Amino acid sequence: MSEEQQYQNNNENIITEELLDNLKIFLQDHSIERVTRNLRRIFLDYLRHQMEFLPAGFEECISDMYDLFELLDVAEDETKDWKREL
Image 1: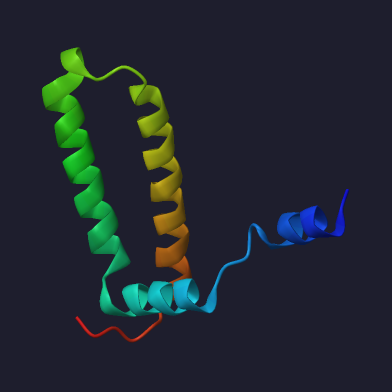
Image 2: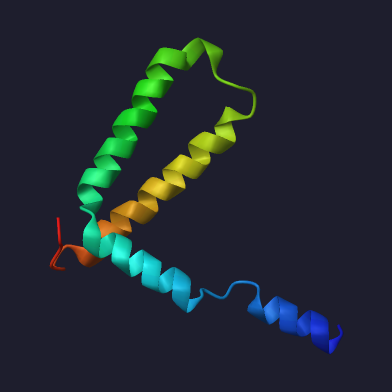
């Protein structure tokens, strides 16, 4: 493996300061519990109304939403004691 390939492999999963800053701002400015609840409500309502007509490959979307909800649950647990500006 070349030095350039090794550098790229070592740096492809870096979380930038900009992403961290924006994530922190989002977590401070929003009730994660409310965001999660609203996203679940919208998603489940969509599923309920579109059950017979879901697009091909929708299983991947369901998997992605599950992972997103898991992430939001962790964010809620980790930030429950933060002061928020709601």
